[in-house]
Length: 548
Ligand code: FBP
Image (cartoon, rainbow, N blue to C red; front, side, top):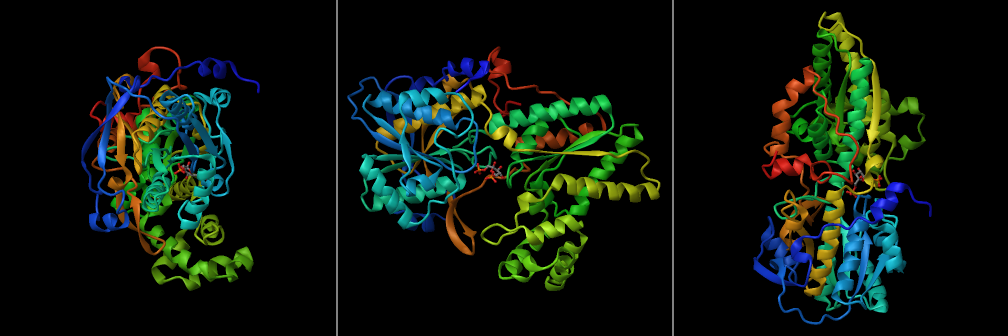
């Protein structure tokens, strides 16, 4: 395979392991733990893995001989920069334990585990992928690992390959499922340990013990680079408003981080829209007011960042989507109807309140909500082009304001959606080091014989050599939530906290960024050079740890 010059140079990068992991380690047990909420229910559901202690590693002055171990690894869900380094760290870790250890990768996500599709990951394969982006070493998939049939089918291949530990690299749902699998294997005496690693660019798998999920750092740096470039273009031509939608599914962490890095004129935070019970029109009016204020200063250009999940956080639209999901699930009429008739039909079926919300939406969006459904029959909110929806509504609002004599400017919009551009970028030094440490640490957890733990590396705003390594029982992060009509144990999704330092930093400056032009141009990720340029963690993490 032909390699770029950067790829070749980057292959030689040796991730910086925390000092504590550099030699032999021994485990130090903390106190028994409790789940974050619903302790009685979680304890009843996880009798074998509930209440385990937090673990920390320290250097072992008298290391003994370790037996070889066969380990399986699965990449689950959306790609995130650094996945290959988790796997190379895991590989190096189990080889350090014993040179005769073997690593098997299940292909295309949990589906490969259930269907027995795998490869052995040998040193030459691993070396091809060190410090690279993507999940292509074994592929990823979104099959949910949740039934006993799947667990038993997977166990067959584990037994066949002599695998006694499985590492699942995934987000909140995949790690919840990892906890259920760990409990099941322990309960039936399968002799298989299950260890999770926190992955997702969305940044919504974090809590007191897991400071960040991997991939967030690199993805947001890539998006911020491009937003910075757009801002420079915008400030040069001074003739466009750029509406930029940013991936991140529900939570607005990505948009917030990019705003802190680039200082756009406007950044919408879905969690704030929900907390203030805003309507879509309120959001639009807020943007239009800023456009008008800028126009009054002669500035007919600007940037607007929009989180992917915005629509679902607007309370009125959330209610509408819930009713549409129920209504359309059993409805075959809509899909066979002519497009021109859909709107009136849907309005006739909805409750008065939701019909009014639906009627207020632009034609295209209303149709998207009615016609595009996923295999479960749910509305596919992520397909809605919020950036175009908002700019069209802002244009309408500005026309009204012009008539009222409140606006006298020009408004021309450009639209962008950034998501896939950042999910497979070569990991930043932060993610390269963090991921390698997570994988290596997972190997140390396996060597300590534990199950139902998430690999935890903390102290992340310090230089990587000073990071602390250990394990957190996944049951500790669980609470009960309603999913598809049933109460289920799940890891709490971390949304943007309006009382948190990252949002507070943003809120304190946004009025100034709105009217004045305070753009910051972060430039591309740097892999070689001074540490202050190459090794900075995200501003979210710095703010959360009181260092911004
Ligand atoms: P994960 O939670 O699986 O890490 O998803 C990350 C993500 O990139 C989201 O930001 C986005 O909404 C989703 O995946 C898109 O996934 P897909 O490409 O499978 O539609």
